[in-house]
Image (cartoon, rainbow, N blue to C red; front, top):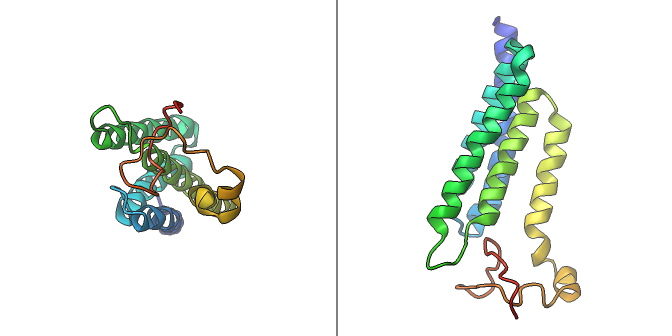
Length: 163
């Protein structure tokens, strides 16, 4: 890879880091187990591997992306397993957020910068949705039956569906 290709790849990796960091900032602010650095590193790795695959091995790019997605899935499963205690499943939102951060890294690594930026905004919106006053008014019973060890911190909990 020539110097121009390496700079292109570095730019994609840097953008991936930025998108992952932004998502991780929200998780860190909520006091979750994975935060800014973790999400930025996930997105950096996804962007680097995807960018290298797209730029150097375009015929194998699909396999490279599938490998990234699989690897991040294992990390997410580890977050869920680590956070779960006494039959309570926790860490789902953090695991899904890490998967989404890696997807933003994949998009950045593939050169889909606008989609990655808009996707990051969408992820943040979805993470903040249940904290919006209008949403809380429209869905006041959404978390009824949810296991909540810490009052007001319903994300990362599995809804048991019981009332």
